[in-house]
Image (cartoon, rainbow, N blue to C red; front, side, top):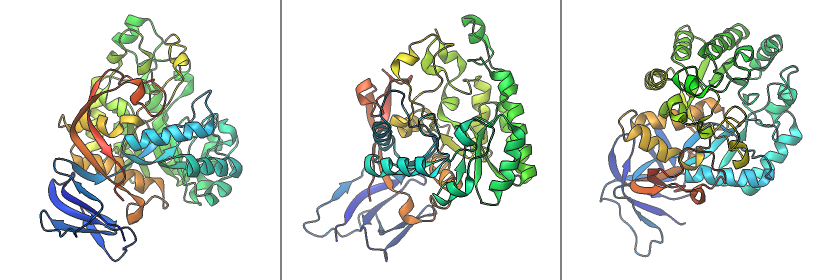
Length: 429
């Protein structure tokens, strides 16, 4: 039986230094680290572990951080013009490089998860091509058209626990209310972004100095805020579990805080880019900063961070959205929304939030691993020891990001040319 011996590992959430032996298949060995149970492992005080002569795998983790791998609650896989299997493969490679062991994949035009055949085909591609685990979110409505509910019994039988139309709310709110009542009996959770399409249609930027300077049509924050209030009220009345996607405004955070205090079954997420960028980063029509919802004010980013720290916002997500280079080179109004983030997810989290003192490692593990695993359903449970792999993170390494360093194969990211700290070794088990 092969064992891995890890010396001088620092458990990132607490700063405790220890030695660790990992022996796959040895289920009688169980370690407890910061409330996380790790099967097939035994922990020793630093320097107290006996390593047998001839041990084949010994890792000196001095100066490195040891933590559970991340789970991303919101990612897209499809890349227009590329085969679906290749998209699955490249996204999986990007996730592993970014410290992500698994992700919830949103339905897209190429992956419409509203029937058993599409789910089976996707899961077959994942099992053959992806280095990371991928869990599809079933469609709320057939074809993501927003008018007729998908067959939830069929989706649930295929292991689906989250329903989403790619984040957008169905246009027929009566259908959504009825769907919520029905799906609540199956234990399914609705993942929806707050929006009022009548207010946001045809817009592409937050109202402010940048929109005025560039002459672009802006999206009023109230479109998101009214949308959040609406879906909260619908879910509350229907008795359904609701996960609010990509919250971007301070008032949206307040709405969620009030709903949670009232006992509503609500969780929420924020995209990493809404924490680290504002509309001012758009500069001179840089389409890599065009997202949905749009980048907001610094006051909104501060409120989102405060919501993460006090538990109002449960998760940080990548909102990984690969786009072909040609599409992003169009004018700002025409170019598609979204940026890639999986390739350097953990290094970005570390460089932008942890190293700057905005988040602790404990908060990062909670919002990027434990909470997403809890929300995503019974098949992804932090109490199941085999469910979360372990990783080593070296915060001392630095590198300049280039197109060649992006496994996802798309370059719609503002990170190109930037120097970022940290490299990931995944998995350890």
